[in-house]
Picture 1 (cartoon, one colour):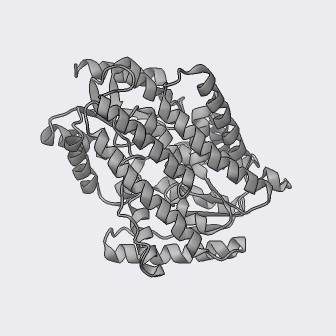
Picture 2 (picture 1 turned 45 degrees about the vertical axis):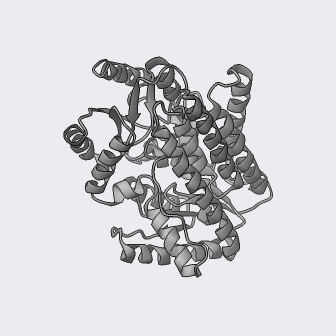
Length: 427
């Protein structure tokens, strides 16, 4: 198939259209103060994505990236960064039947059914000739599904791939090594798309994300309060903003607006939905195939999802006053502490310790662990975590087996029934 330059990223444009339609529905149907995080997030995410759409139409290079490669690092190029996992999962949220067609398409091609739908959506779309990337960049982390799926783009579709080798050592030696890998990877990516890395533009994107980090820290201090001043939908929208538009002023403005909303609610002790009855931590993922679950939990059960794996992962701010090597060192530390990278890259001890600490700090009543089919690197962790939380904090944990992107594995109806039964044991 010969691509028109404007049709190299059809799923990305589908995502923009779906977000625009959702924004219109929210503004026309919901009450003025209904789900403000969704209203705010759609406004800023669409603003940023529409700028990228214009760049696609102008023929700028399209760079696919894994969600574990912070997209703000790609701001050093005049390109269109597209998160393979982000497009697939957020389309699974917004389209009537998600992207099940594309999961089935790549499965029929022969890709194992038990690998991650995060990659399978983009693989199926690419197999259907809806994507053409000028290059793809990814770390060899956080999981086997990543390592097994990304080579397909290189060997079957012939897209150039840059792989940043992430070490297992989470110490200065490991960070120094990965800093070198990031520098070499960005330089190689630049050669593939015919551009030199612009480190001034990179520093500006990193400065923005340093500001975002400050706001997030303040925001999560407020979430420790009872009741939580943030609605559950924030978690899904925040994941979208952090994965799709980091390093942009739109991302910074989203968190600024959310902080102001949280401060207002904190002062007035306002909680979204009904009275907060149960405070939960979801140490893994939400149901991307149906994020309306977030609102249902708030309004039907009075259950707050304080945060999930994509929302509570913080690194140190990057020191931008040092030389370039020190900046890359800060970038490496941040990348190795990204959501799911830190939890999957290290042994489970750190994850268990963090979970116990967070349960106490945020006054959690319980944990809900969504065990996704593909995340085999985490297969033994839920039972260990359940035992540790019971012994160290005295709270229970519910385990739900599902696929985060495919509603056919465990239906939303079944998930709601399971959580409701669990809640009856708590109240």
